[in-house]
Every structure is written in C-alpha cells, then in structure tokens.
Image: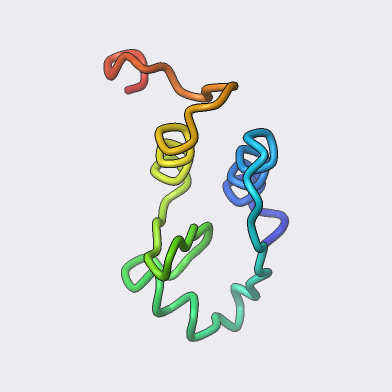
Length: 84
C-alpha cells in the first residue's frame, strides 16, 4: 500500500541502508492470501518477509533492519531507554 506512511518508512530505511528488496503492492480492500498468511493477527501492512519468515509491525521491522544491517546510518539509538 504505497500511501501508507508505515510502508514508506520501511521502504526508505531499506533504500538508505542499500538493501535490495522486492516490493509487492497490496490491495487492502481485497487482501491477498499471502498477506493473510504472513500477518494472521492484524492482517495489515507492512510485512517484511525474509527466507519465508514474516516480520510485522513497522517499528519492529525498522528495529530489525537497524540491528541486522549495522552500516550507517543507524535509525534508532542503541541505548534501550533512549530507543523506548
């Protein structure tokens, strides 16, 4: 869903970090079986899928990107209190 600020944030983070990804547009009025399979509880975007395993919720995805790809820039503070 390209208009979602949460999806745009994740796309921007991936692009800034130089991470190659495949973007798949989702029609939220007619949700695909893939979306329903990967996000059973909330049934919404964004979803980051790595090796068939989904990561959902925009802040969790951003945190995962930041911790997995340590190259600059870091988006979130390393200190847990500051990050919270």
